[in-house]
Amino acid sequence: MFESNEVRASTSTKTALDVLDPVKELPLPPDFLWGVATASYQVEGGAEQDGKGPSIWDDFSHRNPSVTSGEDGDVACDHYNRLEEDLALLASYGVDVYRFSICWSRLIPLGGRNDPINEKGIAFYNNLIDGLLARGIRPAVTLYHWDLPLELQKRYGGMLNTAEFQADFEHYARLCFSRFGDRVTQWITFNEPYITALFGFHSGILAPGHSTKTGHDSTTEPWRVGHSQILAHAAAVQTYVTDFQPSQKGAISIVLNSDFYEPYDANSEADKEACQRRLEFYVGWFGDPIYLGADYPASMRKQLGSRLPQFSDAEKDLLKMTAPHNTFYGMNHYTSQFARARIDPPSEDDHTGNVEELTTNSEGVEIGPLSGVSWLRVTHRQFRKLLNWAWNRYQRPIYITENGCPCPGENSMTLDQAVDDQFRIRYFGLYIDAISQAINEDGVKVAGYYAWSFMDNFEWAAGYTIRFGITHVDFPTGTRTPKKSAAYLKETFERRRAAAANGKVKNGKL
Ligand code: PNW
Image (cartoon, rainbow, N blue to C red; front, side, top):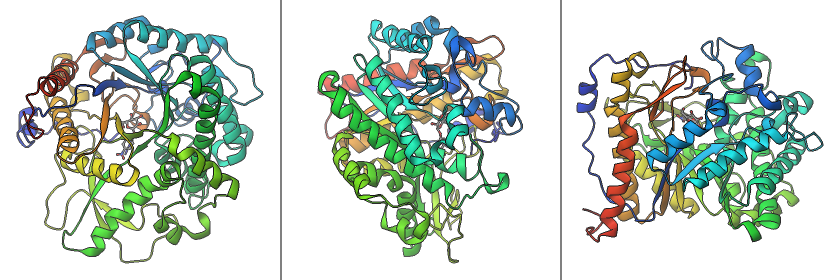
Protein backbone atom coordinates (compact mmCIF):
# COMPACT_ATOMS: atom_id res chain seq x y z
CA MET A 1 0.00 0.00 0.00
CA PHE A 2 1.09 3.56 -0.80
CA GLU A 3 4.12 2.47 -2.79
CA SER A 4 4.10 3.23 -6.49
CA ASN A 5 1.95 0.24 -7.26
CA GLU A 6 0.05 1.58 -10.19
CA VAL A 7 -2.20 -0.83 -12.04
CA ARG A 8 -2.00 -0.19 -15.75
CA ALA A 9 -5.03 -0.96 -17.89
CA SER A 10 -4.33 -4.39 -19.36
CA THR A 11 -7.84 -4.52 -20.73
CA SER A 12 -9.96 -1.66 -22.06
CA THR A 13 -11.97 0.39 -19.56
CA LYS A 14 -15.11 -1.12 -21.02
CA THR A 15 -14.00 -4.60 -20.01
CA ALA A 16 -13.10 -3.46 -16.49
CA LEU A 17 -16.55 -1.87 -16.22
CA ASP A 18 -18.33 -4.95 -17.50
CA VAL A 19 -17.37 -6.97 -14.43
CA LEU A 20 -18.82 -4.38 -12.02
CA ASP A 21 -22.42 -4.50 -10.79
CA PRO A 22 -24.85 -1.89 -12.18
CA VAL A 23 -25.67 1.13 -10.02
CA LYS A 24 -29.22 1.30 -8.63
CA GLU A 25 -29.19 5.02 -7.67
CA LEU A 26 -30.95 4.28 -4.36
CA PRO A 27 -32.30 7.27 -2.37
CA LEU A 28 -30.70 9.20 0.50
CA PRO A 29 -32.22 11.38 3.22
CA PRO A 30 -32.90 14.98 2.11
CA ASP A 31 -30.49 16.36 4.72
CA PHE A 32 -27.62 14.04 3.77
CA LEU A 33 -24.43 16.13 3.26
CA TRP A 34 -21.87 15.59 0.55
CA GLY A 35 -18.53 17.11 -0.26
CA VAL A 36 -14.91 16.43 -1.13
CA ALA A 37 -11.73 16.08 0.93
CA THR A 38 -8.03 16.95 0.74
CA ALA A 39 -5.01 17.07 3.07
CA SER A 40 -2.53 19.92 3.48
CA TYR A 41 0.71 18.22 2.40
CA GLN A 42 -0.97 16.52 -0.55
CA VAL A 43 -2.30 19.72 -2.17
CA GLU A 44 -0.91 22.94 -0.72
CA GLY A 45 2.69 23.27 -1.92
CA GLY A 46 4.15 26.57 -0.72
CA ALA A 47 6.57 24.47 1.33
CA GLU A 48 8.69 27.42 2.43
CA GLN A 49 6.26 30.25 1.83
CA ASP A 50 5.23 32.95 4.29
CA GLY A 51 7.15 31.56 7.24
CA LYS A 52 5.95 27.93 7.16
CA GLY A 53 8.25 25.61 9.11
CA PRO A 54 9.28 22.19 7.75
CA SER A 55 7.20 19.13 8.61
CA ILE A 56 8.29 15.50 8.86
CA TRP A 57 6.92 15.07 5.33
CA ASP A 58 9.13 17.81 3.87
CA ASP A 59 12.07 16.09 5.51
CA PHE A 60 11.01 12.53 4.61
CA SER A 61 10.34 13.22 0.93
CA HIS A 62 13.60 15.15 0.52
CA ARG A 63 15.70 12.57 2.34
CA ASN A 64 14.08 9.51 0.76
CA PRO A 65 13.21 10.36 -2.83
CA SER A 66 13.34 6.66 -3.67
CA VAL A 67 10.52 5.94 -1.20
CA THR A 68 8.31 8.68 -2.63
CA SER A 69 8.91 7.87 -6.30
CA GLY A 70 11.37 10.76 -6.57
CA GLU A 71 8.62 13.24 -5.76
CA ASP A 72 7.81 15.64 -2.95
CA GLY A 73 5.05 18.07 -1.95
CA ASP A 74 7.09 21.27 -2.44
CA VAL A 75 4.61 22.48 -5.07
CA ALA A 76 1.99 19.68 -5.22
CA CYS A 77 -1.24 21.23 -6.58
CA ASP A 78 -0.02 24.71 -5.55
CA HIS A 79 -3.34 25.10 -3.77
CA TYR A 80 -1.68 27.65 -1.46
CA ASN A 81 -1.29 30.04 -4.41
CA ARG A 82 -4.42 29.04 -6.30
CA LEU A 83 -6.94 29.42 -3.53
CA GLU A 84 -9.44 31.61 -5.39
CA GLU A 85 -9.49 29.30 -8.40
CA ASP A 86 -10.00 26.25 -6.18
CA LEU A 87 -12.80 27.92 -4.23
CA ALA A 88 -14.58 28.71 -7.49
CA LEU A 89 -14.15 25.11 -8.61
CA LEU A 90 -15.55 23.76 -5.34
CA ALA A 91 -18.56 26.05 -5.68
CA SER A 92 -19.13 24.86 -9.26
CA TYR A 93 -19.25 21.25 -7.98
CA GLY A 94 -22.18 22.12 -5.71
CA VAL A 95 -20.66 20.62 -2.54
CA ASP A 96 -22.28 21.22 0.85
CA VAL A 97 -19.08 20.62 2.81
CA TYR A 98 -15.31 20.63 2.23
CA ARG A 99 -12.89 18.64 4.38
CA PHE A 100 -9.32 19.96 4.49
CA SER A 101 -6.45 19.71 6.97
CA ILE A 102 -4.37 22.42 8.62
CA CYS A 103 -0.61 22.25 8.32
CA TRP A 104 0.53 22.61 11.95
CA SER A 105 3.94 24.05 10.98
CA ARG A 106 2.28 26.83 8.96
CA LEU A 107 0.67 28.09 12.17
CA ILE A 108 3.48 27.27 14.60
CA PRO A 109 6.65 26.79 12.50
CA LEU A 110 8.49 24.97 15.30
CA GLY A 111 5.31 23.35 16.61
CA GLY A 112 5.73 23.60 20.38
CA ARG A 113 3.57 25.26 23.02
CA ASN A 114 6.16 27.96 23.74
CA ASP A 115 7.11 28.58 20.12
CA PRO A 116 6.08 31.65 18.08
CA ILE A 117 2.89 31.78 16.02
CA ASN A 118 2.97 32.62 12.30
CA GLU A 119 0.13 35.04 11.53
CA LYS A 120 0.56 34.61 7.77
CA GLY A 121 -0.26 30.94 8.13
CA ILE A 122 -3.36 31.80 10.14
CA ALA A 123 -4.35 34.28 7.41
CA PHE A 124 -4.26 31.55 4.73
CA TYR A 125 -6.76 29.36 6.58
CA ASN A 126 -8.93 32.37 7.42
CA ASN A 127 -9.11 33.16 3.70
CA LEU A 128 -9.96 29.54 2.94
CA ILE A 129 -12.68 29.32 5.59
CA ASP A 130 -14.20 32.71 4.71
CA GLY A 131 -14.05 31.87 1.00
CA LEU A 132 -15.95 28.62 1.63
CA LEU A 133 -18.61 30.24 3.79
CA ALA A 134 -19.10 33.05 1.24
CA ARG A 135 -19.98 30.31 -1.26
CA GLY A 136 -22.31 28.51 1.11
CA ILE A 137 -19.85 25.65 1.76
CA ARG A 138 -19.28 24.44 5.33
CA PRO A 139 -15.69 23.65 6.34
CA ALA A 140 -14.76 20.41 8.13
CA VAL A 141 -11.25 20.75 9.53
CA THR A 142 -8.73 18.00 10.24
CA LEU A 143 -6.05 19.14 12.69
CA TYR A 144 -3.55 16.40 11.87
CA HIS A 145 -3.19 14.70 8.50
CA TRP A 146 0.36 13.39 8.92
CA ASP A 147 2.52 16.57 8.64
CA LEU A 148 3.99 16.91 12.15
CA PRO A 149 6.31 19.93 12.62
CA LEU A 150 9.79 18.49 12.05
CA GLU A 151 11.17 20.26 15.10
CA LEU A 152 8.93 18.20 17.41
CA GLN A 153 10.24 14.97 15.92
CA LYS A 154 13.79 16.18 16.50
CA ARG A 155 13.16 17.76 19.91
CA TYR A 156 11.61 14.81 21.69
CA GLY A 157 10.78 12.07 19.18
CA GLY A 158 7.33 13.44 18.28
CA MET A 159 4.58 10.92 19.05
CA LEU A 160 7.02 8.62 20.81
CA ASN A 161 6.96 11.05 23.73
CA THR A 162 3.36 10.83 24.89
CA ALA A 163 3.36 13.60 27.53
CA GLU A 164 5.17 16.20 25.40
CA PHE A 165 3.18 15.37 22.29
CA GLN A 166 -0.13 15.51 24.13
CA ALA A 167 0.70 18.94 25.59
CA ASP A 168 1.88 20.39 22.27
CA PHE A 169 -1.07 18.99 20.33
CA GLU A 170 -3.52 20.35 22.90
CA HIS A 171 -1.94 23.80 22.58
CA TYR A 172 -2.06 23.68 18.76
CA ALA A 173 -5.69 22.49 18.85
CA ARG A 174 -6.57 25.34 21.24
CA LEU A 175 -5.00 27.83 18.84
CA CYS A 176 -7.13 26.46 15.98
CA PHE A 177 -10.35 26.50 18.02
CA SER A 178 -9.70 30.08 19.18
CA ARG A 179 -8.80 31.45 15.74
CA PHE A 180 -11.14 29.46 13.47
CA GLY A 181 -13.78 27.94 15.75
CA ASP A 182 -16.27 30.80 15.35
CA ARG A 183 -16.76 29.54 11.76
CA VAL A 184 -15.93 25.81 11.89
CA THR A 185 -18.61 23.39 13.05
CA GLN A 186 -16.96 20.03 12.33
CA TRP A 187 -13.54 19.26 13.82
CA ILE A 188 -11.46 16.13 13.27
CA THR A 189 -8.39 15.70 15.47
CA PHE A 190 -6.43 12.91 13.75
CA ASN A 191 -6.70 11.37 10.31
CA GLU A 192 -6.20 7.60 10.43
CA PRO A 193 -4.10 7.10 13.58
CA TYR A 194 -3.71 3.44 12.51
CA ILE A 195 -1.83 4.41 9.36
CA THR A 196 0.36 6.91 11.21
CA ALA A 197 1.32 4.27 13.78
CA LEU A 198 1.95 1.37 11.41
CA PHE A 199 3.22 2.99 8.22
CA GLY A 200 5.23 5.63 10.06
CA PHE A 201 6.64 3.34 12.79
CA HIS A 202 6.47 -0.25 11.50
CA SER A 203 6.86 -0.54 7.72
CA GLY A 204 8.50 2.90 7.52
CA ILE A 205 6.79 3.66 4.21
CA LEU A 206 5.41 6.95 5.53
CA ALA A 207 7.10 9.70 7.59
CA PRO A 208 9.00 9.64 9.85
CA GLY A 209 10.02 6.29 8.27
CA HIS A 210 10.79 4.18 11.34
CA SER A 211 11.19 0.42 10.88
CA THR A 212 13.54 -2.31 12.03
CA LYS A 213 15.51 -1.57 8.84
CA THR A 214 16.22 1.96 10.09
CA GLY A 215 17.18 0.64 13.53
CA HIS A 216 13.89 1.14 15.37
CA ASP A 217 11.84 -1.22 17.51
CA SER A 218 8.73 -1.95 15.48
CA THR A 219 7.44 -4.34 18.16
CA THR A 220 6.69 -1.43 20.51
CA GLU A 221 6.77 1.90 18.65
CA PRO A 222 3.41 1.58 16.82
CA TRP A 223 1.58 0.86 20.09
CA ARG A 224 3.21 3.85 21.82
CA VAL A 225 2.37 6.10 18.86
CA GLY A 226 -1.24 4.89 18.90
CA HIS A 227 -1.42 5.58 22.64
CA SER A 228 -0.11 9.13 22.16
CA GLN A 229 -2.67 9.90 19.46
CA ILE A 230 -5.55 8.61 21.61
CA LEU A 231 -4.51 10.72 24.59
CA ALA A 232 -3.74 13.83 22.51
CA HIS A 233 -7.14 13.42 20.89
CA ALA A 234 -8.86 13.18 24.28
CA ALA A 235 -7.03 16.26 25.57
CA ALA A 236 -8.13 18.28 22.53
CA VAL A 237 -11.73 17.10 22.93
CA GLN A 238 -11.70 18.11 26.59
CA THR A 239 -10.35 21.57 25.71
CA TYR A 240 -12.94 22.03 22.98
CA VAL A 241 -15.84 20.89 25.14
CA THR A 242 -14.79 22.99 28.14
CA ASP A 243 -13.63 26.23 26.58
CA PHE A 244 -15.11 26.53 23.10
CA GLN A 245 -18.12 24.34 22.40
CA PRO A 246 -20.51 26.24 24.69
CA SER A 247 -20.26 29.31 22.44
CA GLN A 248 -19.12 27.77 19.14
CA LYS A 249 -21.51 24.79 19.12
CA GLY A 250 -19.45 22.60 16.79
CA ALA A 251 -18.86 18.84 16.80
CA ILE A 252 -15.55 17.06 17.31
CA SER A 253 -14.32 13.53 16.71
CA ILE A 254 -11.61 11.49 14.96
CA VAL A 255 -11.33 9.69 11.60
CA LEU A 256 -10.64 5.94 11.66
CA ASN A 257 -9.92 4.02 8.50
CA SER A 258 -10.35 0.35 7.90
CA ASP A 259 -11.04 -2.39 5.41
CA PHE A 260 -13.80 -4.92 6.11
CA TYR A 261 -12.85 -8.60 6.36
CA GLU A 262 -14.62 -11.67 5.03
CA PRO A 263 -13.57 -15.19 6.14
CA TYR A 264 -11.11 -16.88 3.77
CA ASP A 265 -13.02 -20.11 4.32
CA ALA A 266 -16.69 -19.27 4.86
CA ASN A 267 -17.16 -22.50 6.85
CA SER A 268 -14.23 -22.01 9.20
CA GLU A 269 -14.98 -20.75 12.71
CA ALA A 270 -11.33 -19.81 13.09
CA ASP A 271 -11.48 -17.61 9.98
CA LYS A 272 -14.72 -15.98 11.15
CA GLU A 273 -13.07 -15.17 14.48
CA ALA A 274 -10.03 -13.90 12.59
CA CYS A 275 -12.24 -11.34 10.80
CA GLN A 276 -13.54 -9.97 14.09
CA ARG A 277 -10.07 -9.92 15.64
CA ARG A 278 -8.65 -8.16 12.58
CA LEU A 279 -11.28 -5.41 12.94
CA GLU A 280 -10.51 -5.06 16.64
CA PHE A 281 -6.80 -4.62 15.88
CA TYR A 282 -7.71 -2.12 13.14
CA VAL A 283 -10.62 -0.10 14.51
CA GLY A 284 -11.14 -1.18 18.13
CA TRP A 285 -7.55 -0.15 18.92
CA PHE A 286 -8.72 3.49 18.71
CA GLY A 287 -12.49 3.21 18.68
CA ASP A 288 -12.88 1.40 22.02
CA PRO A 289 -10.88 3.93 24.12
CA ILE A 290 -12.26 6.95 22.24
CA TYR A 291 -15.95 6.13 21.71
CA LEU A 292 -16.54 3.71 24.58
CA GLY A 293 -14.13 5.24 27.11
CA ALA A 294 -12.92 1.65 27.52
CA ASP A 295 -9.58 -0.13 27.48
CA TYR A 296 -8.02 -1.55 24.32
CA PRO A 297 -9.87 -4.63 23.01
CA ALA A 298 -9.23 -7.79 25.06
CA SER A 299 -7.87 -9.53 21.93
CA MET A 300 -5.10 -6.89 21.74
CA ARG A 301 -4.26 -7.10 25.45
CA LYS A 302 -4.04 -10.88 25.16
CA GLN A 303 -1.68 -10.95 22.18
CA LEU A 304 0.47 -7.88 22.88
CA GLY A 305 0.92 -8.19 26.65
CA SER A 306 3.23 -5.60 28.16
CA ARG A 307 4.06 -4.11 24.75
CA LEU A 308 0.63 -2.44 24.70
CA PRO A 309 0.76 0.63 26.99
CA GLN A 310 -1.51 0.93 30.04
CA PHE A 311 -3.84 3.86 30.69
CA SER A 312 -3.22 5.47 34.09
CA ASP A 313 -6.21 6.18 36.34
CA ALA A 314 -6.18 9.84 35.32
CA GLU A 315 -6.08 8.84 31.65
CA LYS A 316 -8.95 6.40 32.13
CA ASP A 317 -10.96 9.25 33.66
CA LEU A 318 -10.13 11.52 30.73
CA LEU A 319 -11.26 8.87 28.23
CA LYS A 320 -14.51 8.20 30.14
CA MET A 321 -15.25 11.90 30.42
CA THR A 322 -14.59 12.72 26.77
CA ALA A 323 -16.09 9.60 25.13
CA PRO A 324 -19.68 10.90 24.93
CA HIS A 325 -18.49 14.16 23.39
CA ASN A 326 -17.20 12.38 20.28
CA THR A 327 -20.58 12.81 18.67
CA PHE A 328 -19.90 11.39 15.22
CA TYR A 329 -17.88 8.53 13.74
CA GLY A 330 -15.50 9.58 10.94
CA MET A 331 -14.88 6.66 8.57
CA ASN A 332 -12.33 6.52 5.76
CA HIS A 333 -13.00 3.48 3.65
CA TYR A 334 -11.72 2.20 0.31
CA THR A 335 -11.59 -1.60 0.06
CA SER A 336 -11.84 -5.01 1.78
CA GLN A 337 -10.00 -8.31 2.05
CA PHE A 338 -10.31 -11.94 3.13
CA ALA A 339 -8.94 -12.91 6.56
CA ARG A 340 -7.42 -16.28 7.37
CA ALA A 341 -6.46 -17.34 10.90
CA ARG A 342 -2.75 -18.13 11.19
CA ILE A 343 -1.91 -21.43 12.82
CA ASP A 344 1.52 -20.51 14.19
CA PRO A 345 1.68 -18.21 17.22
CA PRO A 346 1.92 -14.49 16.36
CA SER A 347 5.33 -13.00 15.67
CA GLU A 348 6.49 -10.17 17.95
CA ASP A 349 5.89 -7.53 15.32
CA ASP A 350 2.47 -8.77 14.19
CA HIS A 351 -0.17 -6.04 14.19
CA THR A 352 -3.04 -7.92 12.56
CA GLY A 353 -4.21 -10.15 15.39
CA ASN A 354 -2.30 -13.04 13.76
CA VAL A 355 -4.36 -12.89 10.61
CA GLU A 356 -3.32 -13.44 7.02
CA GLU A 357 -4.90 -10.95 4.58
CA LEU A 358 -5.81 -12.17 1.11
CA THR A 359 -7.61 -10.92 -1.98
CA THR A 360 -8.83 -14.42 -3.02
CA ASN A 361 -10.81 -16.85 -0.84
CA SER A 362 -10.52 -20.63 -0.40
CA GLU A 363 -12.72 -21.17 -3.46
CA GLY A 364 -10.55 -18.97 -5.65
CA VAL A 365 -13.06 -16.11 -5.74
CA GLU A 366 -11.60 -12.59 -5.80
CA ILE A 367 -12.95 -10.06 -3.30
CA GLY A 368 -13.64 -7.58 -6.13
CA PRO A 369 -12.38 -6.05 -9.38
CA LEU A 370 -9.09 -4.17 -9.29
CA SER A 371 -8.94 -0.36 -9.54
CA GLY A 372 -5.92 1.66 -10.68
CA VAL A 373 -3.90 0.79 -7.58
CA SER A 374 -2.96 -2.70 -6.44
CA TRP A 375 -4.33 -2.40 -2.87
CA LEU A 376 -7.79 -1.21 -3.89
CA ARG A 377 -10.53 -3.49 -5.19
CA VAL A 378 -14.19 -2.56 -5.63
CA THR A 379 -15.96 -4.14 -2.64
CA HIS A 380 -19.18 -2.18 -2.08
CA ARG A 381 -21.03 -5.05 -0.36
CA GLN A 382 -18.33 -5.20 2.32
CA PHE A 383 -18.62 -1.43 2.77
CA ARG A 384 -22.25 -1.90 3.78
CA LYS A 385 -21.14 -4.53 6.31
CA LEU A 386 -18.47 -2.24 7.75
CA LEU A 387 -21.07 0.52 8.20
CA ASN A 388 -23.19 -1.94 10.18
CA TRP A 389 -20.18 -3.10 12.23
CA ALA A 390 -19.16 0.45 13.21
CA TRP A 391 -22.75 1.48 13.95
CA ASN A 392 -23.41 -1.57 16.12
CA ARG A 393 -20.22 -1.16 18.11
CA TYR A 394 -20.14 2.63 18.58
CA GLN A 395 -23.67 3.92 17.96
CA ARG A 396 -22.60 7.24 16.48
CA PRO A 397 -23.87 8.86 13.27
CA ILE A 398 -21.27 8.05 10.61
CA TYR A 399 -19.65 10.48 8.20
CA ILE A 400 -17.74 8.86 5.37
CA THR A 401 -14.77 11.21 5.52
CA GLU A 402 -12.94 9.63 2.55
CA ASN A 403 -13.90 7.25 -0.23
CA GLY A 404 -12.75 6.98 -3.83
CA CYS A 405 -10.41 5.22 -6.27
CA PRO A 406 -8.08 5.69 -9.23
CA CYS A 407 -9.25 4.27 -12.59
CA PRO A 408 -7.18 1.42 -14.07
CA GLY A 409 -4.40 2.91 -16.17
CA GLU A 410 -5.40 6.47 -15.36
CA ASN A 411 -1.93 7.94 -15.03
CA SER A 412 -0.96 6.81 -18.54
CA MET A 413 -4.03 8.30 -20.21
CA THR A 414 -4.43 11.41 -22.33
CA LEU A 415 -6.41 14.24 -20.72
CA ASP A 416 -9.53 13.35 -22.72
CA GLN A 417 -9.37 9.75 -21.55
CA ALA A 418 -8.63 10.66 -17.94
CA VAL A 419 -11.59 13.02 -17.56
CA ASP A 420 -13.96 10.34 -18.92
CA ASP A 421 -13.62 8.42 -15.63
CA GLN A 422 -16.40 5.86 -15.97
CA PHE A 423 -14.72 3.37 -13.63
CA ARG A 424 -14.65 5.95 -10.81
CA ILE A 425 -18.27 6.93 -11.50
CA ARG A 426 -19.32 3.30 -11.14
CA TYR A 427 -17.29 2.91 -7.94
CA PHE A 428 -18.92 6.00 -6.42
CA GLY A 429 -22.38 4.89 -7.53
CA LEU A 430 -22.00 1.43 -5.97
CA TYR A 431 -20.56 2.76 -2.70
CA ILE A 432 -23.29 5.38 -2.40
CA ASP A 433 -25.88 2.64 -3.04
CA ALA A 434 -24.30 0.73 -0.14
CA ILE A 435 -24.80 3.79 2.10
CA SER A 436 -28.43 4.01 1.01
CA GLN A 437 -28.98 0.32 1.82
CA ALA A 438 -27.30 0.69 5.21
CA ILE A 439 -29.55 3.64 6.05
CA ASN A 440 -32.85 2.47 4.60
CA GLU A 441 -32.66 -1.29 5.04
CA ASP A 442 -30.33 -1.77 8.02
CA GLY A 443 -31.20 1.30 10.13
CA VAL A 444 -27.61 2.59 10.26
CA LYS A 445 -27.26 6.34 10.69
CA VAL A 446 -25.02 7.79 7.98
CA ALA A 447 -25.05 11.59 7.85
CA GLY A 448 -22.62 12.58 5.13
CA TYR A 449 -20.07 11.63 2.49
CA TYR A 450 -16.77 13.17 1.39
CA ALA A 451 -15.27 11.91 -1.86
CA TRP A 452 -11.49 11.48 -1.90
CA SER A 453 -10.32 13.59 -3.48
CA PHE A 454 -11.22 17.09 -4.66
CA MET A 455 -8.28 16.83 -7.06
CA ASP A 456 -5.37 14.61 -8.11
CA ASN A 457 -2.59 15.19 -5.58
CA PHE A 458 0.59 13.94 -3.93
CA GLU A 459 -0.27 10.33 -3.07
CA TRP A 460 2.42 9.92 -0.38
CA ALA A 461 4.87 7.11 -1.22
CA ALA A 462 3.30 6.76 -4.68
CA GLY A 463 4.18 10.36 -5.56
CA TYR A 464 2.01 11.69 -8.38
CA THR A 465 1.49 8.36 -10.16
CA ILE A 466 -1.80 7.44 -8.49
CA ARG A 467 -4.69 9.81 -9.20
CA PHE A 468 -7.68 9.86 -6.83
CA GLY A 469 -9.14 13.23 -7.93
CA ILE A 470 -12.52 14.14 -9.35
CA THR A 471 -10.49 17.00 -10.86
CA HIS A 472 -7.58 16.22 -13.19
CA VAL A 473 -4.40 18.15 -12.35
CA ASP A 474 -1.67 18.61 -14.95
CA PHE A 475 1.20 18.83 -12.47
CA PRO A 476 3.77 20.64 -14.67
CA THR A 477 1.36 23.55 -15.23
CA GLY A 478 -1.10 23.12 -12.35
CA THR A 479 -4.05 23.25 -14.78
CA ARG A 480 -7.27 21.82 -13.33
CA THR A 481 -9.87 20.04 -15.48
CA PRO A 482 -13.05 18.58 -13.95
CA LYS A 483 -13.52 14.87 -14.57
CA LYS A 484 -16.98 13.53 -15.39
CA SER A 485 -17.27 12.09 -11.88
CA ALA A 486 -17.50 15.65 -10.50
CA ALA A 487 -20.73 16.27 -12.40
CA TYR A 488 -21.93 12.74 -11.58
CA LEU A 489 -21.58 13.28 -7.83
CA LYS A 490 -23.52 16.56 -7.95
CA GLU A 491 -26.33 15.01 -10.00
CA THR A 492 -26.54 11.73 -8.11
CA PHE A 493 -26.74 13.40 -4.69
CA GLU A 494 -29.37 15.84 -5.99
CA ARG A 495 -31.42 13.01 -7.49
CA ARG A 496 -31.13 10.67 -4.53
CA ARG A 497 -32.02 13.33 -1.96
CA ALA A 498 -34.90 14.67 -4.05
CA ALA A 499 -36.34 11.17 -4.43
CA ALA A 500 -36.73 10.84 -0.68
CA ALA A 501 -38.01 14.40 -0.28
CA ASN A 502 -40.66 13.86 -2.95
CA GLY A 503 -41.98 10.85 -1.11
CA LYS A 504 -41.15 8.52 -4.00
CA VAL A 505 -39.47 6.11 -1.65
CA LYS A 506 -41.11 2.95 -0.43
CA ASN A 507 -39.11 0.59 1.74
CA GLY A 508 -35.98 2.47 0.82
CA LYS A 509 -36.43 1.83 -2.89
CA LEU A 510 -37.31 4.23 -5.68
C1 PNW B 1 -5.95 7.53 2.95
N1 PNW B 1 -6.04 1.09 3.17
O1 PNW B 1 -5.06 6.55 3.38
C2 PNW B 1 -5.35 8.88 3.33
O2 PNW B 1 -6.07 9.51 4.37
C3 PNW B 1 -5.19 9.84 2.18
O3 PNW B 1 -4.29 10.86 2.53
C4 PNW B 1 -4.78 9.08 0.94
O4 PNW B 1 -4.45 9.93 -0.12
C5 PNW B 1 -5.93 8.17 0.57
O5 PNW B 1 -6.22 7.28 1.63
C6 PNW B 1 -5.70 7.34 -0.68
O6 PNW B 1 -4.65 6.45 -0.50
C7 PNW B 1 -5.34 5.20 3.25
O7 PNW B 1 -6.21 0.49 4.23
C8 PNW B 1 -5.58 4.47 4.38
O8 PNW B 1 -6.08 0.45 2.12
C9 PNW B 1 -5.82 3.14 4.36
C10 PNW B 1 -5.81 2.46 3.19
C11 PNW B 1 -5.57 3.16 2.04
C12 PNW B 1 -5.32 4.53 2.07
